[in-house]
Amino acid sequence: MSCPTCDHTLGRLTGAEDMAFFNCERCGTVVVEAHDDKGGLVPGFPRHYVPKLVERCREFAGLTFSDLGAILGHLHRLGILESIYLPENRP
Image (cartoon, rainbow, N blue to C red; front, side, top):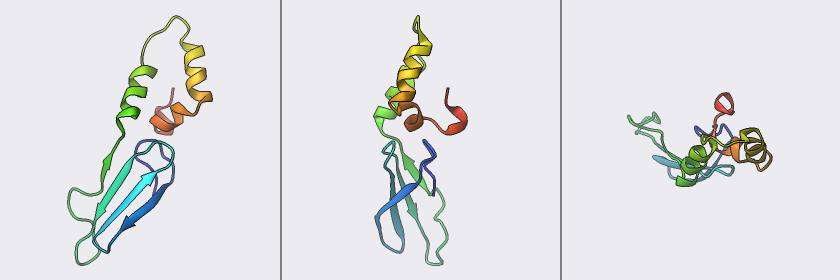
């Protein structure tokens, strides 16, 4: 399963037959799945929880600076852009 925040592969943390928890090692997003007795997803699932740091980094990446290219270059080099955006939304 891919991460809904950055598209990285999610790893399974733990879970029982009716509830499973996954996390993204890249950005920290947590995904929770709940299954009914027949193995189908419970309505409203999966749910995902995005770390506050991702929101703050997205806000920072959207700021206007005199040398935006240099700042975006650093964010890319440090792996921050790939950790906070899906591939199709990366600047």
